[in-house]
Image (cartoon, rainbow, N blue to C red; front, side, top):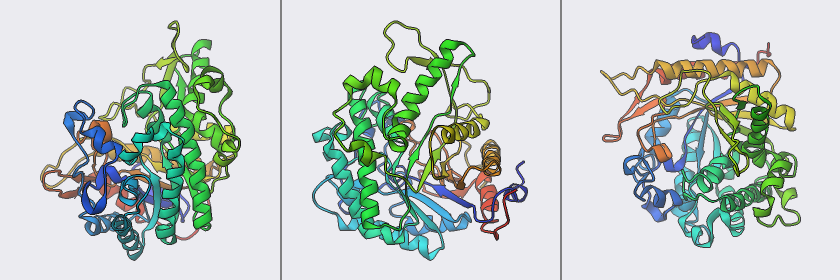
Length: 457
């Protein structure tokens, strides 16, 4: 059902509709006002790392177009904006001197949102580690966790009075496995031991940052955004079912278990524990502090089969074929019901607080034709997944809001600018913004809220 008014009636009147972005993907101005390089500045300038050598040097030029882009969010009709804060703007070397002009930019962002009646949901880390910290080992070094704690304190002391909520990390799966094991994202490592060190130090940094937020701004709800995988066995064979459970432990449990249970998955520790860094006394207590909320980023299921190759490393899985032949332009299978299955499974496994869908969306690369962008497949994707969200609320899951990814087309990491996720089209030559068909539809849906407090059905 794509009628926005009919769909809106399936949500509680105080449900939050928002849009999301991330600093390196939209801001540009990578050398402005004291900002120094992040690992993504370095990585994107390395030949062969990003599609056609694209970089975030200019991106959407959001840093220089802040007011106009905030007007764009207001025009979208949403009540919430999820964005990330660039660590290299705040503490350019990761440690040491605080850069006031960087904080000034986010002052303007928050004040601008408040003036427009838009709630603010900040992410402290969306992958742009200050490059200087790589000299100490980056996330493979325990010291980075403490540098992150200080950064969190600095940010919250200055900006926390205008934040509606804060997340410590966005998708640590990406900044750990994709970045240190698979080599696809910065810093481009392909080393299990480095990845396991990054895993524990990222989890520790999360816990230390939760302490920092609660110390500095005890009234700001603090959470964590996870791209939990909806893992599906490729067949009903016993081998594939066991492979799926290993994959759940590796892709989800490595992050959920320490945060929500206070320990790492037994299967992961049994297979890889000898390559983990030292887990010091008290680490897991710091990591597993209760959260006020959590965020789920969902796009596509993960289908796995057993990898029977001799010596295959844990989790010893390989990709299994898609079930639905329909896929987005980035090649991801469209399977909305997997999101519902994932949420149900996570709430069965863990004692979780209320949550938001903090990212959901689709890459379709339609261009502007006669002033319009007809991206009907993206509109359909949103409608199908939002219908699943309404079902989850009906079934009693504490889903409080939904952030579309993304407000506008932007730098899509290793894919560069060839993949477009935006509700708003960006012409990277002129920086002109054009509402897509999906953006107009989402505006019509979001503008229905808030609308009283009608009860859930």
